[in-house]
Image (cartoon, rainbow, N blue to C red; front, top):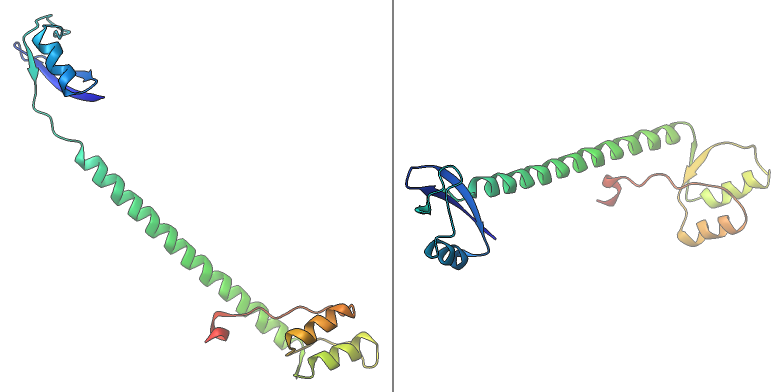
Length: 149
C-alpha cells in the first residue's frame, strides 16, 4: 500500500491509499478519484515530505535504549561485585584463615576433633568433592572480578 497526499483544483487537500503507484495512475486516468469536499475529479498529487524524521528518531531512540540498558547492566554488575566484596570481607573477618589446610581443618571440625569455628582457606576441586561426599557442608567464597586478574 502507498499513501499519497492529493489536492483538487480548488486546493482542497486529502489523503488517498492505493495498492501501488500504477493503481493511482489508472484511477486518475479513469476519473475515479474525486475530492471528498467538493466532488471534483480534477485531482493531482500534492507535495509530500517523506517520513524520514520518524525513522531516524526511532533509530536514535533504539540506540539510546540500548545504551541505557548497557549502562544499567554495568551499574548492576558493579553493585553486585560490591555486594560480593562486602560479603567476602565479612566472612573473612569473622572466620579463621587456615590456607591449604582447609580440607583437614573442615574434617576435624565436622568429626568434632576440634572446637567448631568459622574457617576459610583453599581446597582443590578434588578435595572439595571429597568433603561433599563425606557430608561436610561448606560454601566457596564469592569469586570477585579482581581474583581473575
